[in-house]
Image (cartoon, rainbow over all chains, first blue to last red; front, top):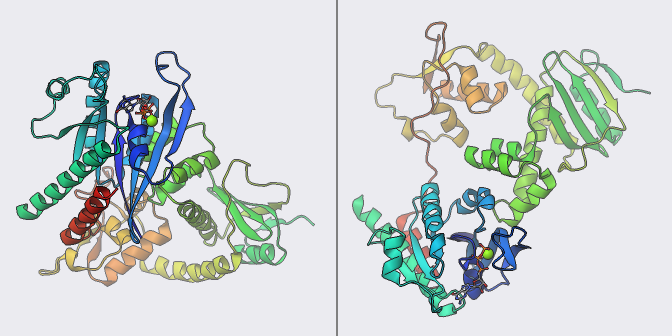
Length: 181
Length: 276
Ligand SMILES: Nc1nc2c(ncn2[C@@H]2O[C@H](COP(=O)(O)OP(=O)(O)OP(=O)(O)O)[C@@H](O)[C@H]2O)c(=O)[nH]1
Ligand SMILES: [Mg+2]
C-alpha cells in the first residue's frame, strides 16, 4: 500500500478545513480548538495541529490531504507536514486583503521546504466582497505563469478542480524534467 | 540481599542473565569511569535507559534514528518544549508523520544501544534499585533480554577483534588510489554512505564517528568493511591542529521510483478525483 500526500496551507480562516472536508471520504480529523485571543475571534474554532482527510484511489494507493494550522504560533508543524508531499495548495481568502501579505510569506516558506509544484486559490469567490482574480494576482505578486484558481471551498466541484489543476501541474513538471535529461 | 558490586567480579552478561531469570523490576545503575548509565526493567524485560547526560527525549531519539531532520527536531524542541514524550508521540502519530511502531522501534533501538555499550565496560560499580522506575511521562518499551545477551556477547568478541584491527580512532582516512574504482559502483549501505561522505584526510575517525553519531564499535565495523573492500586507506592526520569536521558536499540520494511509475501514479490520482 502506497500513500501520497498533498498539503493545503494558507492564512488563518482562509477555508483550508472546509476545502478538505468537501472531498475527503472520511470525516475530516480536525484538531479544532476554541479561539482564545481577541484579535482572531472572527470565528468560533481554529485548526491547531492539522486537518487530515483521505481519498482512496484503489487497493494500493491512498491520497492524504493535510491542512495546516493557520495561526502562526503553530508553524512548527509546517515542515513536518510538508515532508514528502507531492504538491501543495495555498488558499487565500479573497475577501480579506489584509491577509494577502501573510499568504505570500506562507507560500515562500513552503516553497523553501520542497521544490514541489503548487497552486494558489482565491477562495470564497461566491461572496460579494471577493476580489477579482487579476487584482489578487497583482496584490499577491504572483508570477503570470503560476496557476491562480477561483475557488469556493464549500463546493465539491470547485475543490476537485483545484486538486486536478495541481495534479496537472505535477504531471507537467515530471514531463519537463524527463525532457531535460 | 542488595544487588550491588563491581563489574570486575560480576559482568554485565551475568547481571542481565540474573535480571532475566528472576524477572526483576527496577533500575540497574552502573557507574563507569566516564559515565553513569541507568537501565530500567519490568518483569525481567528492558523498559527504559538513560546514559549520562545524553538527551533521551523522544525528539532526540527520533533524530538519532533519522526519523526527524535537524531542523525539525530543533523546531520541535523549541516549540513543543513543555509537551511530555507521550503527548508528543501521540501528536506525531496523529499527524501521520510517523507510526506508533516507528516510535517504539526507535526507542527500542536507542535503549538496546545503551545496554550494548555496557558490554564493553570492564570497570565500574553497579547496583540494582527495586524502587526506582522510569519517569511516568516517558514512553517505555518491552524487550526480552535473551537476544540482547547473545548479541552482546557476540559484540564483545567482535569488539576485541576490531580493536586489534583499528587500534586508534585518531587516524584519518583517504580514498584508495585505484584507477577505475568508482565509489558509485559499490553497493554501500546508507550507514556506509554517511561515513564515506565524511572521508577526508582532515577528519579523524573519531570526528567522523561524532559527526555521524556512531558508537566506537559501529564506526570501527564500517571502516573495517571499507578497508577490506579496498575503498579507503588509513593515514596519519595532517598536523596537530585539526579543523572541525568538514560537511559532506552532496548528500547521498535515496533511490526514486522511475518516471513512468510516478506518472502512472499521478494519472491514477487524476482519474480518481475526476470521479468523486
Ligand atoms: N462563503 C464561503 N465561506 C467559506 C468558504 N470557505 C470557507 N468558508 C467559511 O470560512 C470560515 C473559515 O473556514 P475554515 O475552513 O475553518 O478555515 P481554515 O483555513 O481552516 O481556518 P484556520 O484553521 O483557523 O486557519 C468558515 O466559516 C467557513 O465556513 C467559501 O468558499 N465561501
Ligand atoms: Mg482549519
